[in-house]
Amino acid sequence: MSELKVLDIGDCLIRDHGARIILPAISKLPLKKLDLGFNELSGQIGCDALELIRSMKSFETLILDGNEFGDTWIEKIKELKQHKDFEFFSISIKEDEGISDVSELELVEALEKTNL
Image 1 (spheres, rainbow, N blue to C red):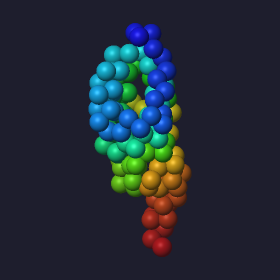
Image 2: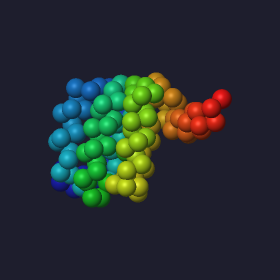
Image 3: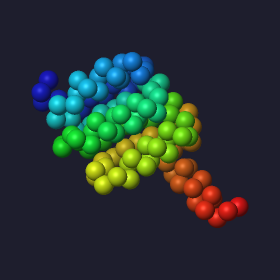
């Protein structure tokens, strides 16, 4: 298992409880890609996953699509994504139960700046 590069546990309904067990267990693996999409995860788990991959040197792609983050957590995840540690990562949060994707969030932010 020490050579595991891709872990696809998307759509397995692991929920927060399962993610809290899995995330620490994979922290020492040389993962390049982790798919946690469609698992009914909360936004806190999304942020926890981002914090975990920050220290993983070979990591490239985190998929968080289709979870239950909501608008507030999507904004927090977007803020974390802008940190310099994540500039080379692909992080996807589409089809969430809140704002449908980051591009929609960027549109909302642009409209807020125009003071309409």
